[in-house]
Length: 296
Image 1 (cartoon, helix red, strand yellow):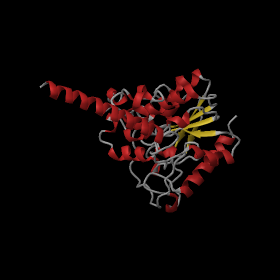
Image 2 (cartoon, rainbow, N blue to C red):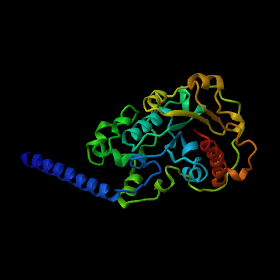
Image 3 (cartoon, helix red, strand yellow):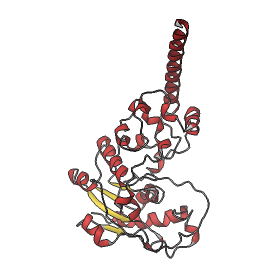
């Protein structure tokens, strides 16, 4: 019995040591690399741009900061994050502000129903595979940002490799040191080229229940930042909230309304039912650049 007990202790020590060694190897493999489109938290440290864009995939894959900078007099960064809503968006803003070289003058926030309606504020833990490597020992201090999401496990930060449970593909990508999704050169913009799709099917206009900025307005006021609302394109304006609701949420702020921008565009401007192809991104970013250029 004593021998079995000693063997179990030895096995436990071996497992912990082996796990720690792999953790060290993973850390070294992924230093300055990106194996997932959402592994950009280190990239938003040290920002010094005048205009930040905030939204979901229809911001992160639609707005090209490099193109906007070429056609405007402003420096731009895209803080958009695929799949997230305003709640995590504000957390990203807070994280970026805490680590910024200087705060921006403007934050342009996606202001459609899909992003800022209270029904869409996420309580689940989306796209965990995009942040796995940062959780170990709270490497860059983002664990607290995710702790109120379902499926968050505090032990993910302390038990070697536990956070990879259910994510074997991501584990092997980190093990091999993938660097496929590096967005630094494009300043946060990401568009996987893909093929050409088609128009979004026109549906009855969605009805906004209640809009929320989750405290973004207070954060911006504290740092003397102007908030600008951006309503991205949607077929038939189906994601466009009533402007009266938006005006009451953002009194006195600029609102850039592109709700019906896609209605007259050719099918070649779309990659899939909700996202632009590269030619669509170019057209849309040019339109955004003209507005950015006119900011005071």
